[in-house]
Length: 224
Image 1 (cartoon, helix red, strand yellow):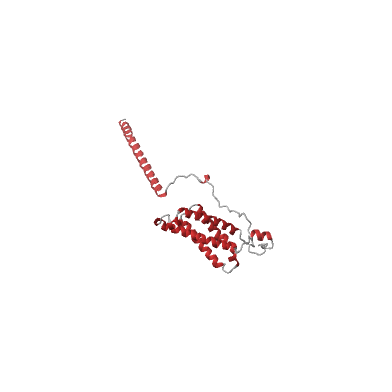
Image 2 (cartoon, rainbow, N blue to C red):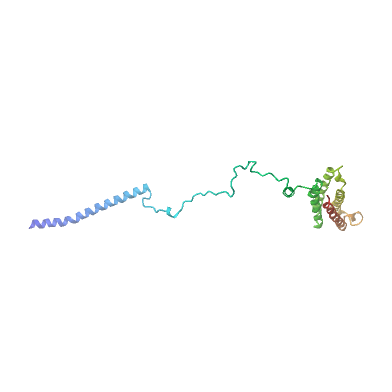
């Protein structure tokens, strides 16, 4: 009987120790497994399952654009190019736009008339002496060029050409008058020789020149 009680007591005392030993062993095993997973994860990156994001996007494919015209295989071929209808008066007069003006009229319309219109605007707008004289200077140089160009030719006897030479002389005289007035007026009175540089006299000369320019423009536009 005493032996039986001793065995029961020994068995009761040994059960918690065994349980405790088993639990700690399991814990150490689980901890080492977790550490091994973390080490592997650090070396291999994310080891989980990634979502499939390709379902939300469509692949863009390059599309070929067709030309709006059809390709000509024999573009440089003489059979593909139609000849110019030079025998058609409508094409010659309208499409080619032949210049029917003479070289003299080209000089008048392209060079002289624009300069005369600019001088006319200077007088109307009461431009200062420097601007006025500069435009007169260029007109004089152009007229001198035309004198040399048409010397001894029929154009030099045209009424329009003769009128242009007269106007050029008048514009130079008015330009000299304004230049001298700017230079000497501060030192001269409005009596005697100083009267020529009076503002009223200069304005009167500009009015005469304006009328002459307008008349010359009409004559030049009617030239043939």
